[in-house]
Length: 147
Image (cartoon, rainbow, N blue to C red; front, side):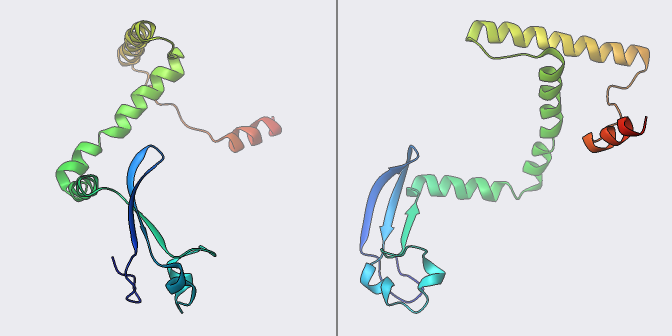
C-alpha cells in the first residue's frame, strides 16, 4: 500500500479488533513525521499513519452487499421494513412483551401476536383506525398549561 505522498507501508499484521478479524497496515513513523500533508492523513502525534483493513473475503462480501443495496429490487424489499418495525413496536407497546428465557419468549411472542391481531380485527370491525393523531410532547405540554 502506498500513501498519497508515495511512501510505502512497512508493516502488514493480522489483529482482532472488537472481536473482528482485521489487518493493520502501518507506515513508517519517520516518513509521516516530516510529511507536509500529515494532518490530512493521520491524527496520531507519535506514530505514522495506520489503517485497519478487513480480510479480503470479508471486504469483498461487504462491497457486494453495498452494490446490491443500490438496486431497485433491494430497495423494494427494504421498503417493507418500516411496516415490520411498526408491528414489532405495536406488539411491545400494547402487550409489554419482555425477553426472559427461550421457551417463555416463544410463548410470549405467540400471545403478543394473538393480542395484536385481535386489536387489529376489532379496529377493522368497528371502523376505528389504529393510528391516532400524533401530538408532540411539547404540544401536549402547551395544551395542559392553557387548560
